[in-house]
Amino acid sequence: MRYVKCCIVAFMLLLLQSAVHHFGLPEWLVPQGVLVCVVFLAFYEFSLAGVVLAFLLGLLLDLSSGVLLGPWAGAYVVVYATFAFLSQRLFVESAVVAMSVVALATVLAGTVFLLLAFEYQAVTREDVVMLGGQAVASALLAPFVFRVLYRAWRGAHVAVPGRASVVSAV
Image 1 (cartoon, rainbow, N blue to C red):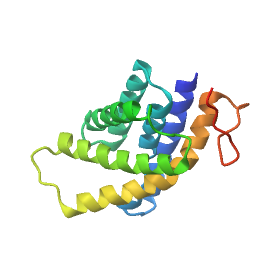
Image 2: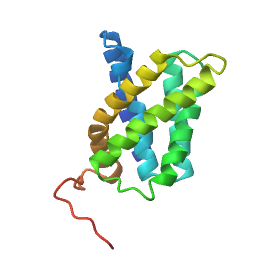
Image 3: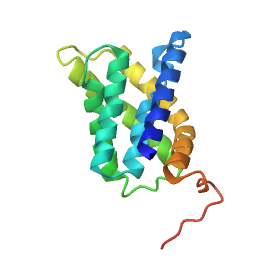
């Protein structure tokens, strides 16, 4: 059931992302909410089901973008695999770590997407500016999405970690 909840949150973020884009906000300021869901999965779901869900979320973005079928799915699987292995060594309950990892993941996913979708075109300055802006916008969105997904992942009765939480060594 938590995978379904994650897909619903990702779909709502995709709708929000496209709505913000249609309101005239520059493309470099539009956060990649679906990618934040993939990073959350990398932190909290280290399994084959997480890889499949990351692929499906990338495929959802591919279907909605209308460019090509597969580059976002491949990029999201690379991001998931990279950060799933690193998440075993990171303190993931920290908002600063989540924001920095999401910013790095946005740049990584955008780079992989550009390599897969436009492999014979040169990367321009506008592409770099777009990736940087989206990385900052996605990082600012990350704590809110992580909080919502954490509640959905662990159940509504579990307290969300914050400043008052104590890390247990057990």
